[in-house]
Length: 112
Image 1 (cartoon, rainbow, N blue to C red):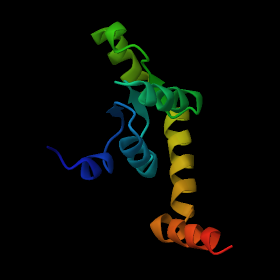
Image 2: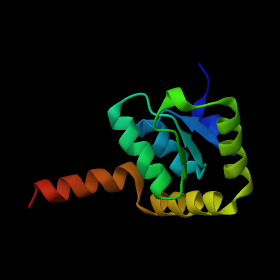
Image 3: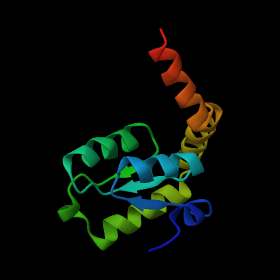
């Protein structure tokens, strides 16, 4: 067990299974991701991570080699587009108001 949020707040790259929790946390902290999905739902998220420029996806975990993983890490560390995109998504997420704004929007919707 590790304090994931403490680590993400200092990380340069996040290797994730592309679950919604970790993906959201990485976006919040502006950390580019290497997505290695373990199930269909995560494969969809991994594809979106790659399509949106937030990282690199490995749709088939059985095809990963130490070389391909190293190349992906190097790509995320040295191509500023990934860090910039992650920062933009982070700023957008933080501007939305968090849990309180979400609760207020749900209550407003239910009271229509």
